[in-house]
Image (cartoon, rainbow, N blue to C red; front, side, top):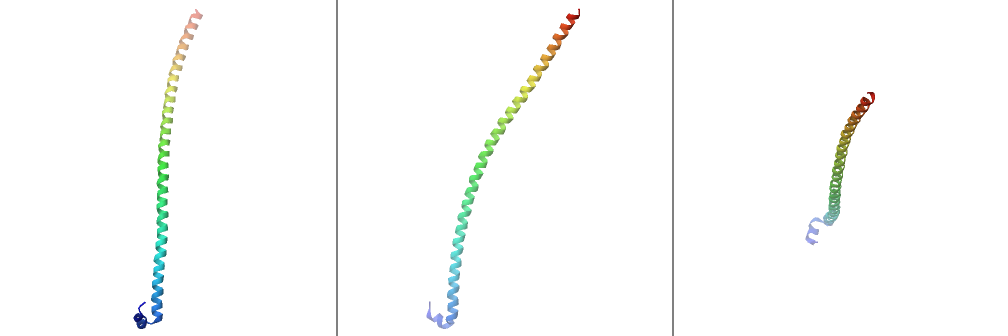
Length: 108
């Protein structure tokens, strides 16, 4: 410290200036440390969110494939049910025809 400054402003003012400089340096160091820690944690969280997002996208793709498979199975089951109904109605009409012929021939 310059002695001329000490003689001009006095010891108390020089002490206050020295403490002010020390406090400013301490606060700057603390802010830098805290901000670095916060930024590191922020980047870590962003990376984790990106990983979770990738997993969700993959799960959505799997879910979409499963829904598509189930949709196709449902469509096939409905088609088969309609075919069975048509066959059943055809069999019923054939049975009615056979029964009419049998009763008609039986009454004669």
